[in-house]
Length: 102
Image 1: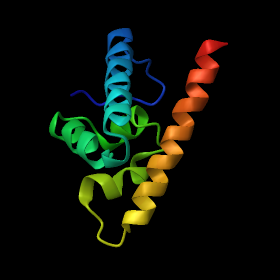
Image 2: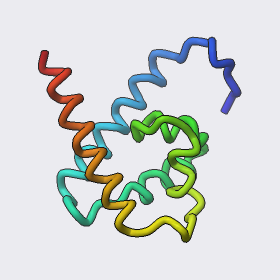
Image 3: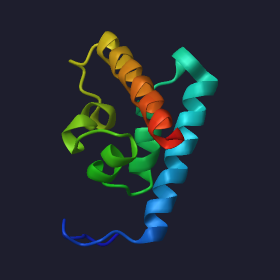
């Protein structure tokens, strides 16, 4: 994986692949419902050499620090916080669908 400057434009194919990954994660979320945990897709992306920043972008997080607890298993994070995060993501997904429909 090649490091990029922040000002460097992303490859259109890379953008499309990120969208496909997002769709797959959303499908998993719908199928699994309450059993879904973002840690699994985050770990899969990490094992595929995605950087924490790229994972954050795919998971609709603000930055690498927002996915650190998913990747590195911070024991101080409580299960309730993970559930709240999932709830927030579902709300964001609904908002994105509404934007896309316009």
